[in-house]
Structure formats: C-alpha cells, structure tokens
Length: 112
View: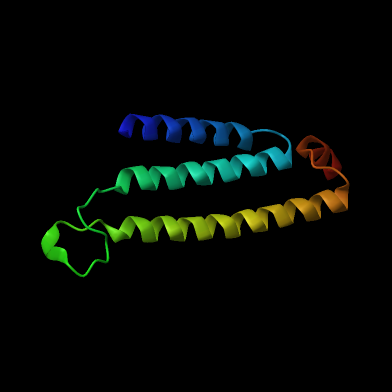
C-alpha cells in the first residue's frame, strides 16, 4: 500500500509541476490544484497510523488510538488550498477579462 501511495503522489506531483510550467493560465491553475492534491496525499501517506481504536474514543484501554494530528493537518491544508485556488482563479478571471486572453505569451508581449 505504501508503494501505491508513493507512486500516486509522485505521479500527481509530476503532472502538477508539468501543468504549472505550461503557458496557459487555466492549465497552470489546474496544475496548481493537482499539486495541492499531491501534497495532501503525501501528508496522508506519511502520517497514516493504523491504531486499534478511533482517535477520540473514550475507551483507550482497548488499544492504541489513531493519530488525530494527521486529520487536522490535512483538513487545514485542504482549506488553505481551496482559498489559494479561489484567489488564483479570481486573478486569472480578472486578467483574462482585462486583456482578453489567458495565454501568458500574449501577456508578455503587452509589456511594450
């Protein structure tokens, strides 16, 4: 199972970086989101601990509890990634509306 998580994380990270290097802003934004998802999967794979009882169970005498820190960290990372992605999409929408293009090569030619 660890090999599957490592391969999936590496593949998603590579696809995200590849999309970030594209010259289209929409594809770069999709790469940004794929990269965020890969980072969340990495956090999940690294911090996963299979305890015998749930994290917030009252009866700890039955076994070792799972680690709740991973859940909190991933939830925080998801919220931050959604906020960053929303700001990025807003900037792309404003730029595309103002300059009538989402191509970064065309925007570079507007410098003068």
